[in-house]
Length: 195
Image (tube, rainbow, N blue to C red; front, top):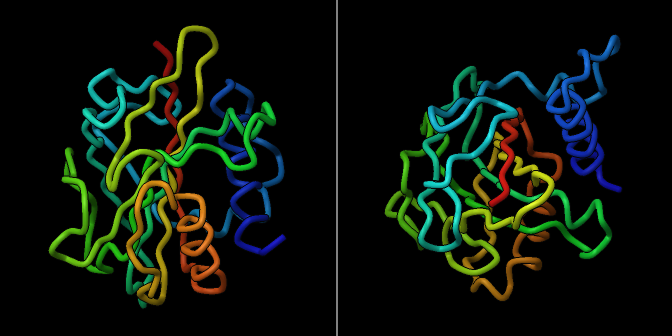
């Protein structure tokens, strides 16, 4: 297991604990140092319900994201939004990638609401399970699914090529493999959604 994957799992476990209403753990997880950046959105409170505007597949719009306290030397950012429940229920080998954007310029302080699909003029590349952009949640009635937005600050620009949605699993692995050893900071937001 790579250091990046281990740190990600520790942060997500903490996010689930806090989202469920548990008290802050007495001892910070090993990945706490990676949470120096701050990420916010006007769309929902951390741990809150994702409004329907941002759900419903390819017709949904992506929420605005802002970040601050970025470490010096940041060359690019990666944003990942994924649904954790399929992995927890062991119905899939990888959780669902609702949005993966990489090579966001290191000078950026966020993403506006409704990022258009495809490669952006600033060099940002995108992919998701069904499109080459944001794909809103569609969890059915029942228990809430947890949709985690992760932001990574990197000290490099990645050389991972754009790909088609049917290659989302391979592309996500390639992006995270290329990130390993280059993460300067990380921030996480958790949202919940069901129909």
